[in-house]
Image (cartoon, rainbow, N blue to C red; front, side):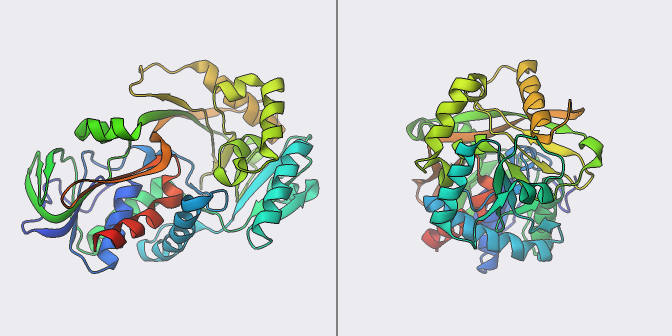
Length: 379
């Protein structure tokens, strides 16, 4: 991953908006401000975005959201479509397939389809699922296709978006730490920056700069176990794939009355899946490998040791989903994102200084919609 700017690319003159953090949320705010004609600069502590923004599935899971998250997700979808052409990264309008392997899971999807309508949810029988997912668990009973959902390859899209901003005249100071933030002034490890407005988009690291704000919001870190595995038999799967466990994670599903039956049954049959907070899902990268996940664990600080049992659990369930005896691992990693009781943190912490974080693991899906709302309140 490369950058078009040098590490010391701090603006010499005051800017309308300084964004701290060049992950998806920070870039979304910079894009929104730039498109509104504001002068913008970005400060990022790493040499490239290396956190949650490139450690997830690249799955823009629009349809499964609810409430304000759905509002943001629908707005973000339009922005992703616009930016793919501008910044030159690949975006797939392939939707999502939700695989139902029990009648209670299909019942959730039927309730969801009735609530959302045919433009958002297309119910599938087993043959319909097979058209999207040729290799699958023989216990599949049906599913649904969510056509509005999108996919990007994060290892391509996030750097491309940063480089496009630089081409538009938005400087990014990489490998630059923020030391202090106040009204109109940000002190960094490479010098001071003056800005009329500041957005702190530092993800799960709000407590590094603003511990009291993080504590008041109830923020912790959510650690995910993620795997990249070889596609069995070279199978190609264009849409993102969700499962019955996903029905317990995303608000649009989990709020439905039928979802509780799924939770009760999973607790009886496979309690280890709920104990590890598994959301069994995958996407396929351009090279054919499958990104498979994920488990969830919550803490302020983590020991650096990886539990192999979690990988084994994902490999077992992933192989079952794909209807194969086993999967071959190519890469393993931990994802980490900010978690709090509410899905978003948006708080003014000083005059003209906002801390903004997606605290629900849906940053890719909602960041551009959230950024538009934040900019509406700033300008």
